[in-house]
Length: 159
Ligand SMILES: [Cu+2]
Image (tube, protein in one colour):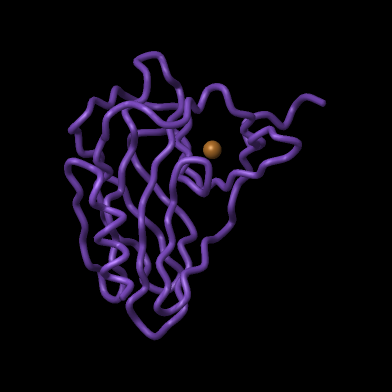
């Protein structure tokens, strides 16, 4: 049943890629092409835990950015605010989606350009499975303009 849902969700992107790593099905890691002048970008992914053991995504690493973290989006008084997420639990049989206006990878201090169709190497870090190599596909531009959103982790100096 879950597989059917995932297939439907993935019907829209022109290209999608996925891989199995142990019990984890990692589906279409992607980064919408950031504007040329962007210094930060968001990344998205779908992960299914097809095993019997609870799993947690606890980090991400890529040469594409100086800092890569997990973020969640909170809505307060109609304003979207992002906050760091320490871990993302993925229960057995569960599928989690990192998607625009929700949880996402946050890449700050981009080290290079990303053009539609590029594949950007990265490493996901799971509590049990350890490190898993993936590639983010650069999708067509669109989605959320990261530069307009309050990133709580960016500025600890003010206020
Ligand atoms: Cu963010």
